[in-house]
Length: 369
Image 1 (cartoon, helix red, strand yellow):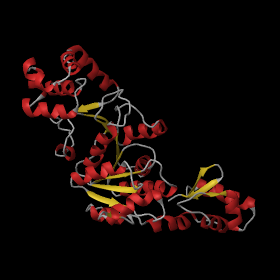
Image 2 (image 1 turned 90 degrees about the vertical axis):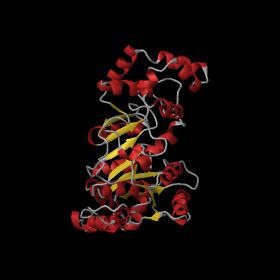
Image 3 (image 1 turned 60 degrees about the vertical axis):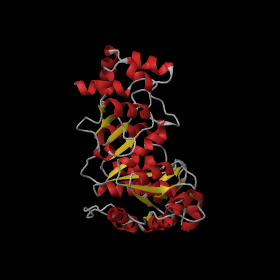
Image 4 (image 1 turned 180 degrees about the horizontal axis):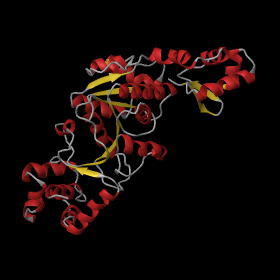
């Protein structure tokens, strides 16, 4: 732990003092080291409440600072600050830039284009598959995938990038070691190993509503463009969109049916001038990604299943009865396919094994893009 790390780590963990006050102090004192050694009469003007003053006073316990910092290393967590060579350049000049970051895994490459894929937590089957598809195919083309490791669109975008063995980073609205939601625990571990996880919050900080808008500005800040996959008319997704607009990022949206409430947000974005996205090639063109050799069209990836897997006639019949956007019950598949129930079940099982369809719930099936 060098001198700069010591003072910046202390500065980021003064209890009761928020980021706005931190920035004000930095503007006056120039560095955490000078603030650390400043006289009490110079500090008191920034700390209006007694708990803040008490927190500032006890925060200088050197033994506690070193012990806390050591725990990060034991958990495989790195702490970086504006004087660190690893500090992301994309975040350095955004409004309200972070004064400290906690990282597990790797940070995104500054040389690679990056896109934030965001949307509703309560996504439809269609939204889920689109997020996974774009996450996978963009990662396949060397684009970093940034999102919030939440359930719904976020998690599926990360999942797609991991399927392609590409880079993806999850930005948390809680402590760097807190898995939220718990259902993403396995993905959390995968991203530690193959991608990265980032937070402004030290270990043990529980999720809270106030932390997520702060998190969203980092999601936008790390990306060259913000792709909204599915969002309702009034959605927390638009906090990230607004942050992206303020930061000068490209805003992209996947359109949906006008009768679908969970696509109203995307449709409104398109109406207001966001880039309309109907395929991976649209994103690559907008972000000016040179590597397009691995770009696959959505139609091709679906039709590819027939040629690549040499489906039998019964399997083709069953496959043609299924949809991407909505899972179908097995009895309805039997009725629509017009072949014997046992043949339908055999075909469904084989298609699942081939990974061209999936059982989304017991006896419900849908096409896997």
